[in-house]
Amino acid sequence: MNTLPRPRLLLLLAALAPVMLVLQPANVDAQTQSARPPQRPSAYQTEKEKMNAWTVGLAGGLLEGAPIRLAAEMGRVVDDGPNLHVLPIVTRGPTENLNSLLYLRGVDMAIISSDSLEEYKIQVPQIQSRITYLLNLFPSEVHVFVRPEIQSLQDLAGKKVNFNTQGTAAAYTGPMIFSRLGIDVEKTFIPHQIALEQMRKGEMAAVFFITSKPVDAFVRGRWEPGFKFLPVSYESKFEDYYLPAVLDASDYPNLIKEGERVSTIAVPTVLVAFNWPAKSNRYQRVARFVDYLFSRIDRLQAPGFDPKWKSINLAATVPGLTRFTAAQEWLDRKARNAQAPPQ
Image 1 (cartoon, rainbow, N blue to C red):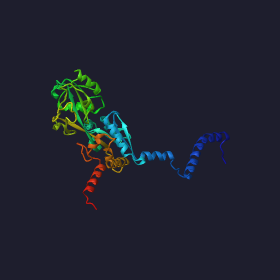
Image 2 (cartoon, rainbow, N blue to C red):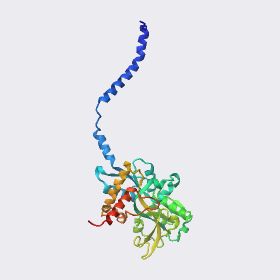
Image 3 (cartoon, one colour):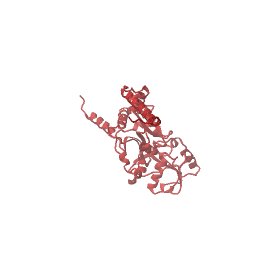
Image 4 (cartoon, rainbow, N blue to C red):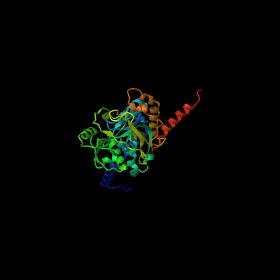
């Protein structure tokens, strides 16, 4: 019988030893794992999954703005422990919220100005099918406040007009509206409080506010005769995102005479959601949020919450967008129940 010389045998065993050592633990471990019963999830993992199952992220806006306050109030009203938890998110502003909804992880809904869709028409051509609206929250009226020597919007051509700080609704909507009107102004983006003081000194011709009326700065401020709001006519060029609106003496008794009305336009402030597939978990979360919010809207209209809730119309539509399916179904059920004869 032929045998390997002892030195060669030793060399062969030395070469095979690492392979045998690597293979043996793997085989043993595989056998051990197959015989081991499946482990139960830890208490930590169970609690983690429970908390995330019905949590929705809502992009609100700047800390000092109305949208984040509304987001927080919605979160309070719909909160149901492990069954529904809303996380209001402070962001760079309502014009950035659409970006957050499209690209940021954990964001299911957002409060936006409807005209922010304009920015996405080129980069996301199908934007109006990517998002749906849940609720038309409130209109934000355009306020073009000017010095006494300014008599019309055309008089502002070439003059300083402030649009608040970057990231605010005014900073986005204002320049777009003036562009549609064909009026080239000198745009500034500083806090409105500073701009209003510059107006008093004659250093600024106008300020552009877009927010829900009435605005405290105009209600409480004392202005010399001649300071006023300019009308902005609702024309076909504004039909895509805007609505007609008015400012009157009940809004600003110190600036508008009794019986006078200043025509203007308003942009809807809208609660929107990503257009999740109907059977997905994210869709189900938003659908539950809709059911809780719509069913409890009367709680938001009670004292202690923002007065804007009192004017909310659940059935109000939003130009250019389709309603979230679960929201439409909720409204349809309510309409059928209202028409059903009493039993």
